[in-house]
Length: 231
Image (cartoon, rainbow, N blue to C red; front, side):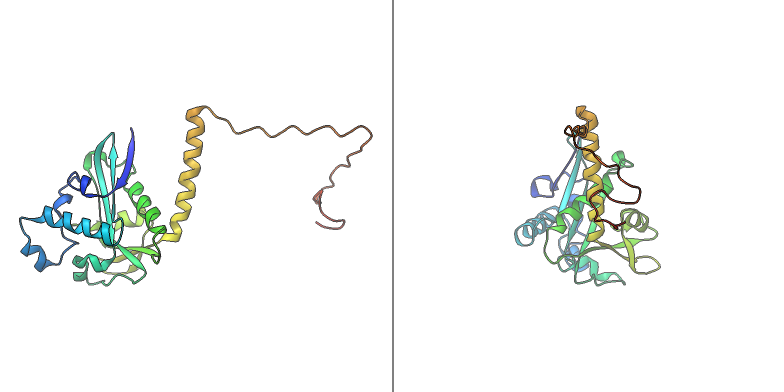
């Protein structure tokens, strides 16, 4: 099963599953959403185009065996006015807002959601001035609601930043994702070694001492290179 993660662009926007290609819940306020009803796909594409040109990458798309399985979208809260209606708004000035993340039901329980979160964090680590990611979570998600479940956010590294009975604001410090990256890279190296049959290089055998040279045994509790008296 081959996975591939790519930037969200106009080329793959229309392939997003679950109706996400035409969802404008976060990109526009309620008045604007009512005004563009019937033209959501064009308006969403225009928003993505503007963000790519003026701010940078705002999403990732994940495919499994060349089939689009899910996506993730983020941006500064200023460019996601749909967030202003939440009681726990506004988003902190040092954070971007995780707006949406979706994995097609046929591809769930495979860790794709965590892969998407990690790919977002990796991108934002190189974006100056961004220290964290925040998201509005739902304790009891409603059918058709474009708000991520609190349980999912907690599972991928977010913590409650501002409590609320239904829609708390969650936060993930980007520094915590550095550990994730190290773990992923180490696991990838181990997997590569198994697949290719590579083994770690053996330690060189100790060379015999030249004739006439006597090597003293190392006394317990003392490093062989330490000065006399060091422990």
